[in-house]
Length: 117
Ligand SMILES: [Zn+2]
Image (cartoon, rainbow, N blue to C red; front, side, top):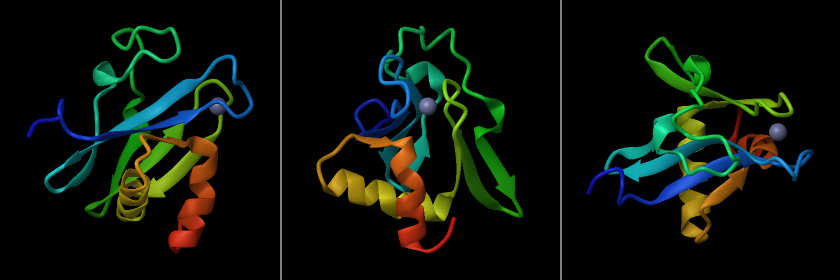
């Protein structure tokens, strides 16, 4: 299995700007969990060429060996921080439900339900 064939989940933001949806991040399920795909693999959902849109360097933060994400919408400015170990089970749930996307604005409530941000 490689990253191209793996199931993916897109985190996107369009609540306050439905005319201009923004793909925040896309995760692919690999053998050892969900991994952030590089920006050039993103689907072209917002009219910006994936090659032109640079994924922000600070989307992944490593603190003392733990990985966390800062998931930013560059259209409305919402940023949701999420620890990797909290995000993994949420992505599993989304995938189990047969869904392939998660609104950025729905993530904080899911993170709270799973324990902590
Ligand atoms: Zn937004």
